[in-house]
Image (tube, rainbow, N blue to C red; front, side, top):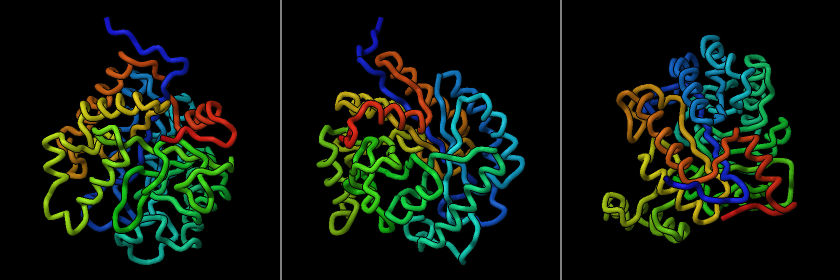
Length: 340
C-alpha cells in the first residue's frame, strides 16, 4: 500500500474557475447578450468537486451575474458553504462600455484607471445584487495586475487577488519576475514582494519539467520570439520531453503532466497548489487545447485523476482561495512570503 508523505502541515490545494461567457476565443469579444449557457453545468461540476473534497472558487464575471438563469444555477451553491464567489472583470462585457474592444483593450491592465474603476464598481454591485455577497477575491480578465488595479481592488474591499500568471508574457502584458507562491505584493510594483498587508496575491501553479524553472523559462521565452522562433524549438522540445512547460490546468496540460508538475513543486517545498480553468471548458468548443469533445467528462476526469493521485501520496487540504490565503498568511512571517 502506498503511504502518504508525512508532513507537519498539509499541502493546500485550490481550484479556481473563471466563471464566464463562452465564445470562440479567436473571434471578436462578445459585449452585450453574451452566451452563458455553460453555467448550466456548474451544479453538476460542483457535485463532482464536493465528491473529491474540493472547495472551488468561482470568479464570476458581469455577463454571468447579469443573467437570471445563470444566477439561478449558482445561487443554491452558496448557502452550502462548499465554494467561494469571487469577482472576474472582463472589460468587453462589463459596463460601462467605451467603444470596441480588441486584444489590447481586453487586458484590464491596459485600460485607463477611470474605466477600470467604473467597471469594477459595476461588477461588485452586480455580484452583491445577484448573490447577496460582497466578493473578497478577484482575478482580472486575461490575467495581469498593476498599480492602478491593485489600488482599486483595495478601495472596493478586496483582500485576495489572483491575477498573477507566473512565467507568462505576451505583447500585451507580462508576469515576468513574479513570485510563484502566495505573497504580499508591492502596491506600486505588484510583481514584487512587500510588507503591506492589505491585499494578498495567490498566483496559479505553473512550471517546467526541469528543476530550474527560471532558467527553463528563459530558454522557453527566447524561442518564442525572433530571431529564434523560426526554429520551432519549443514545439519540438515539448514533444520530445526535452523542455515542457506544464500548467496545473486541465485545459492546457494532460493529467500526467499536471501530476508531474505537482510532484516537482512539492519536492521544491511548495506548500500550496493552485489549479485553474474556465467554466466555458465544461462545454464542447475549440478553446481547450486538449479536450473539445465531451468536454465536461474530459475536464472532470482529468481533475479526478490529479486529485486521486495526489491524495494517495500526500496530505492534502482543499481550500477556497480566501481560506488558502488566510492559512498561508498564518504560516509565513509578518513581512515574509513563501516565494520560490
